[in-house]
Length: 214
Image (cartoon, rainbow, N blue to C red; front, side):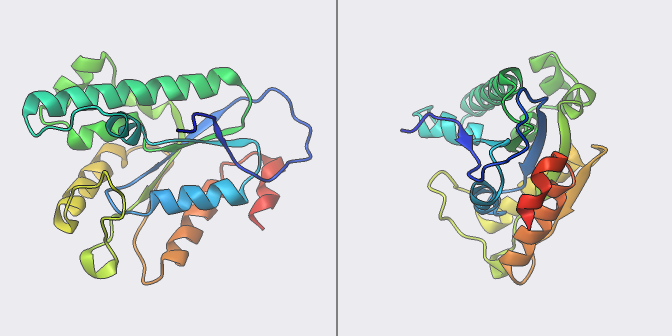
């Protein structure tokens, strides 16, 4: 398993050293296309952008038990939350990148939380406002319906198209009040969806990096 940071490939000639890192969340329900957008970002964006992997994939892909009991579901969400938080803190403290592009954010766990929202804040001793402040922007790719191309290509994806839609709606309610929240709905062509997401990302890129979108 490759544990090296995922850094975008294009060189940038601005000669900036230490960076103040802004975090951007790329979120959405199962099958929304986050993986494809992030892979495109890795190839097209510059070295001042790093991509944080999905915490859930790290947890479940690393052998964390995925059981259906309430106890197990709460345990997995606590693990995911802490992995996500620590990765974000690591990226910001390194000071090597202008943008940390996150595959989901800390509050995505609310969409999978089986207790009350108040219990979520109590469990992690935090608030929605505190976590909104962590992120410069939130870009929400909506889950496609079955006729728009929903699939099970991700080996850790277990949800049906209908279940994905329910989760996607919960994610919307978690993030919709963020001051820089953008929703990107599914389209007839996935390329159009990717392009729309990239235009949103571009708005928050360091000035020296924006030319790489061309």
